[in-house]
Structures are given as structure tokens and as C-alpha cells.
Amino acid sequence: MDSEDSDSDEDSDDEEAGGSGAPVLQLRKVAHEGCVNRIRAMTQNPHICASWADTGHVQVWDFSSHLNALAESEADVSQGASSVFNQAPLVKFGHKDEGFALDWSPLVPGRLLSGDCKNYIHLWEPTSGSTWNVDTTPYIGHTSSVEDLQWSPTEPDVFASCSVDGNIAIWDIRLGKSPATSFKAHDADVNVISWNRLASCMLASGSDDGTFSIRDLRLLKEGDSVVAHFEYHKHPITSIEWSPHEASTLAVSSSDNQLTIWDLSLENDEEEEAEFKAKTKEQVNAPKDLPPQLLFVHQGQKDLKELHWHAQIPGMLVSTAADGYNILMPSNIQTTLPSEL
Image (tube, rainbow, N blue to C red):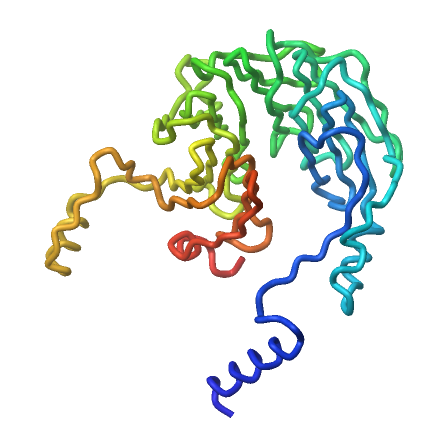
């Protein structure tokens, strides 16, 4: 049987099964007290999740039973979709105010940070498989709301924070409740940060004024640690994340309804451009205001809020917005990544 017949048979099977071959979404709903501001899964145990609520509470959940139910579900894909399961969280801790900043340690299983709009940061230390000790004495180093938190990918006791005050702070929990260093990062609110897992000296930050910057933390003592600064987006940056597979690649989303992917290793090559024009015999000139590091622009979503790279599939991302979420895999990104991953 040739490949065309095989593909045709597979399509027929999909249609007989009641679908056109399109992906089918299965879900389970769990009741949550208050609006979910943010949710994060533990790196080492993804069935353990922490959630921020607009009530001012951070809760830790064990979703293993729901994940198992989804994995075992085959016949009725709608089963459980309309039901809301009432489940008690493993731990519930009240901040002085609501917040958004939340991050699990990639190096110490169960270690968690939560930051609120009152500028307080609390450290959660696991005491067993299902209990945590939350330090009620906060880390204080910002004068306004803590917007995002990131643990160091190489130092288990070091983390970074960013704030509405325009600053980024670097902390070492062994040195007390004050930051080891703090610096002005943007002229407006610093909404999001991302610590490069493959090049641990690089920290990316996105601002409310639409700009985002890349810093080399090794240059902090010299004063100017900014190695790249971009003003492409015209509205607040809502999410930023380094690729887990390529050290020079990161993705950015903005309130301008664009998701962009960047490769910082790229530069204009006039010789290569001349060769391309000669080969194609076309005069293709990129706009002067288009940065050479810009690889891809994704549009079509309204009010983009968050993006994440797929941990196992190089080049794949998921983005969330007010009108749903997208899963994308740009072809020009895939080819730049290691084929063996």
C-alpha cells in the first residue's frame, strides 16, 4: 500500500470515529477560591501545583488523580468536562494582599517563592511530601508590588525579583531578608523576568512601556550590564521566557496582541544579503526598523497574557490569551535547534 492510500485510510478512520482528525481537548475542573491570578507546576513533580488567588491566598494542590483520570479516559471525552471537583489544597497561606509572582525552584524540589502587591516575598520550604513551612517573615527589598520571581538555574539559594518600582533585585536566602544587590532595570514597571537556564549569566526583563532588555549578570559590578535592549513592542510586555533548548533564543508576548521570537545571536550580514539578492534576482529589503534578531511574529490572539516553551519538543510554544490559547511551532525556529533533542 502506498503512502497516499495509507494517509487516506487514516483520515477515514478519524471521520468514522466522529471527528475530522482535529485534536480533542479533555479537561477536568477543580473548584478554586477566588480568581486564579497565576498557576505554576513544580518542576520535579508536575502534578503538584501552586496557585495565586485574588483573595490574597497562595494554595498548593496535588492534581495527580485528575491527571491520571485524563490519561485513562478514552471512550467519553466529555466525561467530567461539566463537573467541578471540590478538592482541598495541601497548603493554604494568606498574604497581606493578592499577587502574581510565583516560582518553584528547579534545583530544590518543593521550594517555592510567592510575592504580592504589598512588596512582600515569602519563602516556602517543604517539610515532607505534602506539607510546607512558610516563613512568615517576608523578604523586603522593593517599594512597590512584586511582579515576578525567578530562581537561579545554578544556585539553589539565589533568586531574582522584579517590581512596579522599576527595579530588579538579586537575593541570597543565606544572607538574610534584604537583597544582595538591586538595580534600576526600566523606566516603567518591570512586569516579567526570565533567567536563562542554558546561559545562567543572562537575565531577560520586560517592562510596562513595551521594552525588554537582556542583562549579563557578570557585568553588574561594572555598572551597565545591559547587552541588548529592544523597543519593538508598543504596549506592555506580559510574558518573557528563554528557550530551554537554545541559549540565544527567547519568546516575548505583549498587550499589542503579538508574540515574538528572537535569536540574539543574529546580526545583519550585508554580504549574505547581497548573495541572496543576486541568486533570487529580487530586491527584497527588510524594513529599517525591523531588528535582525526578530525571527517570528505570531498574531491572531486578543489580550495575550502568558507564553511557555514546550520542555520536550524544541521550537514548540503555548500562548494564553483572553480568547483562548494557541499551540504553535514556527518552521523557521525548529531548524535552528538541535535535532537530537
